[in-house]
Image (cartoon, rainbow, N blue to C red; front, side, top):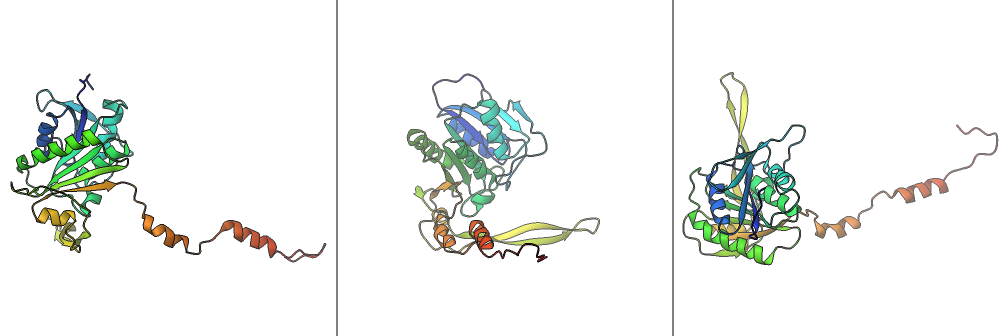
Length: 281
């Protein structure tokens, strides 16, 4: 990484690949805020979740796609991109901000679990870097991100000024179309995909399967990310990577689990000693 000024250092990652329109738009906004380093997969990695590369080498190479921007393409996953950026480019000196996206397609509700975009941001937060994932409700390769830019800049300015609680990052989603009413701070909606595997046949008469599905929202609350997006607001959900279900701990403590110490004490107490010379076996 080249020597930088006193401006904040910003790491940009994504899961759609280094040539995606979304990352170009995110880069243009971040250049207004600080010194930018881009590390992105060399090919699309959507739906990779928090996968990392194990058992084969990771390669990353400097590329010159845009004048004056330090950019690297990586053969690994979105999470690999963050790991290698922190260790080999920033050399352990953490960036001031990690932003991921702008993803082509929403990462609201349950999608946050599967998302490579959000997993890259989660990895940033694990590294104690203030991190944000950005997504737009448009899967098109030439999606128009222009109406998101002022909101992205404002959100990043707030994070740079105030920071985020440790172990927390932001999941930001934008509705499609130019009319955004504003920003809503939300909770993750209770929704999921009703999935099906469509069976097809290849030219050799062998079956293969294509994942399809319908998004089902079971949550009627007006404080969710799904509601906000359906009503033309940008949604911000604070996300944590501590997956502990704290509300279930008390219940589990009421169950009767095996206690090895008590079991061994009971075994000793119940042992019958045989008289000398008597074989009980």
